[in-house]
Length: 250
Image (cartoon, rainbow, N blue to C red):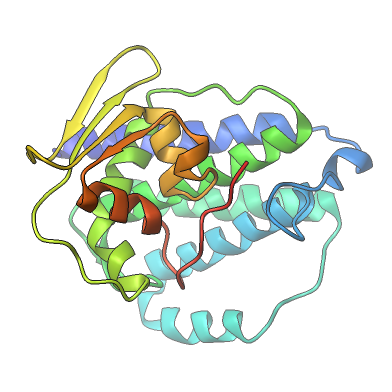
């Protein structure tokens, strides 16, 4: 990816955040208390989680030497719930800090993060993935549209690139060989990765992104997983950092 593409990626991250902001802006108390499909999380808790993630990301980007200490403190402190206006204001403030720091960075500049150092390119992609996944949760819970856009290309790209990580996180050996991924984007675009002749994942970009962010089990999606390596991958696919989790159905 070129520097121009990196600028477009940061702009896409801002657009993804704005899309979610438009959904939660102006919600009443009932809307903020609406449970999502993530057990124990309502709309307010989801946005508070994003605010906390952005605050940690801002430290990684602007105070990298303090990141490890701040991460340890965050893990040891569950925090207390805040009023919805405070939560929304904090999310807006912290994500603006992150966007500013990413815009000032070079695409290959490296920063600390939960799963280890990563480039600014990967950092921005991970922020977009997390925003989209939680945005999907909130929109689905509220019953409002959250249209698929070309920004899903970034989420799909991350899903493909984290294949090795997903196997390692679950303690499962990485199968030999590659997996070819053939996806159809929201506007009918053809997105492909890999060159395997035997292992294939094929379907819509939306379904693939829902599976790799564990918002949907592959059996409840329209994805085709052909070959043992492809099926093993989809069983453990996890595009986000942290301990291994299991995809839910529905």
